[in-house]
Amino acid sequence: MIRNVHERVLSGDAGFAIDRIQELWPPAWGRMEFDRPLGVGADGGHGPIRYRCTAIEPGRRVEFAFTGLTGTHVLEADGTTLRHTLLGDFPLLPRLRWAFVIRWLHDACLEDFLDRAETAAGRPPERPARWSVWVRLVRRVFVRRAQRQHHSVTA
Image (tube, rainbow, N blue to C red; front, side):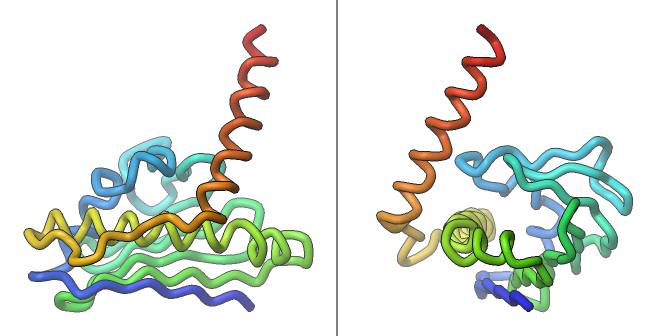
């Protein structure tokens, strides 16, 4: 079982970030988009990551289930604390991908999101998140690969 938690204490009530998750999502990680307004049953995701909204309590909690994998990720507000929890029971190959690639990208993405939420709450982070060398390298490889695939499709 994979369990990954990120949390940040904001300068005020963290509930606004639940309601503004799409607006606060960091653009460098692909827009968070859905096939309809965010609510139970909305299908979407960001970049190549796909999921469905399975529960939502405005200002408190939003839960997504991954498409094609057994797992969820939940964003919840508890007073001034904003917390994201990913739980996954992935088969071997996706688990290896998680360990060597996805986890590092996921962690960087979530820290960028929490930085944006903290700034929107009125207090920019004291130490903004920085991408590691590994994250920058992996992103560069994936972006080049995606550009090549896009070019071959449009040519």
